[in-house]
Length: 408
Image 1 (spheres, rainbow, N blue to C red):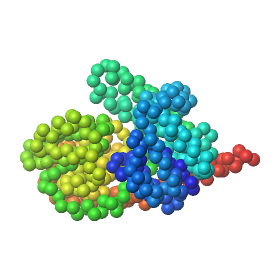
Image 2 (image 1 turned 60 degrees about the horizontal axis):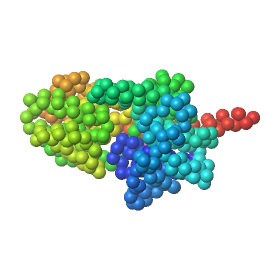
Image 3 (image 1 turned 45 degrees about the horizontal axis):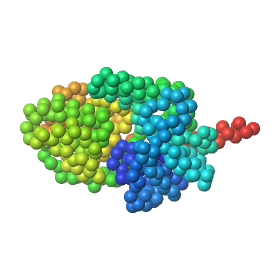
Image 4 (image 1 turned 45 degrees about the vertical axis):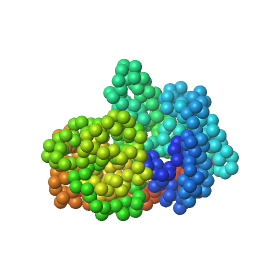
């Protein structure tokens, strides 16, 4: 098959959930399909990064899209009857529309795969192949979950209005595509409820177990726990602030020399301020979290907000680290509390789990081994990429049958 793959960011290096998803799909899918990759980039991409992606894509086109170049009025309002969220309008770039037009002028594509609902506006009307939308997060829920954290009535009202716009927009957008891929089962169920006619499938984020293997037996730093996640994403900021303010002090009561590493890109001031505590260290913008995370004894994911993917938890599990998370964090993962992960329902229970793991090597080994088996069984790159390949192939066959029936 020939695939036209559109993304709002360049997938290399894979230092975020969206990039990990793309890299761990594009590499194996390139064995079966010819892929043309089009991505937006505010400042362009280094030539070496573009050349790296050409190993897997027959054509790589990077389109410079600066905020001042956006044309909000050019959004196709028909996608959602005029209810277009602010973020969608601010990502309407004429240059990106033109890049898609130029790519399609040169060849016929069997499928167009669009990453994130923000880019649903770029699906050409009457596209001849299979249209696929990869839903990384239910944006409406993300906005709804951030209302409580906003200060001032005006901010709260604006956030609520965006939630309502996203709710309408997402329901209309997923129904417009031939296939919608949800990266979390919970998200898929919500989208199906909002858009009953949509063709929604669950495909998890694939994990490159070969990349994690060298770190499985890395030396550990005694009583070191780590949090990892993009710190320009509010649910991750909420998680680390909650942990440091409510959970970490309880752990220190039992393990006084415990240390915390916060690993994440673009930390805001309130996260940087946490380092005033000498037990807390910040490792911002590292090119690869794995060597830093692998030094830990325990990984924590105290997420309370947001939805979508759980890359931080999958990454730790693939490194053979025991993970303590929340009921929200385990949603959609093929992992059970007490076997592959430990789940803390409140600050005291969360802290108790971390302390148990720090003090009980046998428990750490049991949880780690089960977690690694879970990743290898359900999330390994070859398993998930085959699932995506089969989904694309079946969708194309179905569309061709449908077109053939209409032509009779």
